[in-house]
Length: 418
Ligand SMILES: NC(=O)c1ccc[n+]([C@@H]2O[C@H](COP(=O)([O-])OP(=O)(O)OC[C@H]3O[C@@H](n4cnc5c(N)ncnc54)[C@H](O)[C@@H]3O)[C@@H](O)[C@H]2O)c1
Image (spheres, helix red, strand yellow):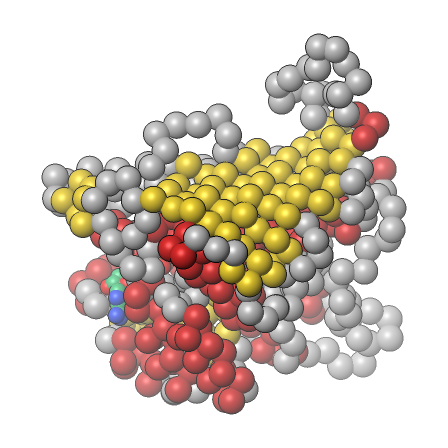
């Protein structure tokens, strides 16, 4: 009986800005992930980050990409640099895991996928929030038939942008930024994970302000030009026949709406408050549901409020911010030569959807989404231990499709919120 060795992925991190801290923390939790070097356009920033997180060395992006001791590039640069860094890394024979969006054009995304395939390398991409306990639980509930056949989905995120908390928010208002490309990946990736590929979209969008002021940090008072639309509304048709609506905005001062809801023939799942300040790292949080049996439509007047929803028991781990979990999955995908859950094909599909929504908004017509994508398997509930556990016949546990749920929901999976 032989067991595969625990993977050891030597990672070079490029882009040591704001989001790199949580990746460095997550990687430090897992012996499978070893960040051996970091770099950026700002050597001073990278040296400080290396010192703070015990990264052994720093270098220029080109030095890190050329380093033969590195297996994978973690690309945490700004959106306009994602494709360039990913393509350089793949060309140098490294696997890549990148922040979102995958690229700023569909053509660049396709170049990344083609190159990875030609070289036999893995490509992963944020967001990986859908691997968190909350979303894995939702998928399990849908797979088990809690709400019957899904019919619709709604996602709403309204913020007033990032200029009050990000010290260098310019890229959010440049090509490759905007709420659709910045926030859309979280919600669209979750939608595809839960409901399957998207086949057609329409959109409307507006740019409310032509310039915006930085309101924090050393550049407080600087004005930034706005090159992208900052309020986007869209309609989404899934290949399964489910239809959805999505609002992503940097122009909303306040709202009671923020939530993500999935409607089915037999019930509703409600994921409250997926707002970017408290929950875009939405690995975690409550999952509510009401089925036909608990519907409030039989009462007159119909009760309102959020107190009497049923609360689903979270069945999966990672109920805290752990960006980088997708990279851990990639390390096992490399070892086992299986698809990456937060994979490039999924990210490219989501990019096509977002570009399609933009095209629809510009041209005033429905846009068909070319191609499809693989829908990731659920994470095993004991991931990553599951990947190294042996079953009696010697095969690693959970090595088969993760998505083989029983037809009926187990009563122990649910409890009353009341
Ligand atoms: N800040 C957040 O809260 C947050 C949250 C989730 C995702 N993200 C995503 O993470 C990515 C980075 O965001 P951030 O907030 O850390 O940005 P940031 O501006 O704080 O840092 C960007 C880093 O990338 C480096 N960089 C830029 N262009 C480069 C190039 N051509 N070559 C090499 N390095 C380059 C910069 O030197 C810097 O180290 C973006 O794609 C963003 O959408 C950010």
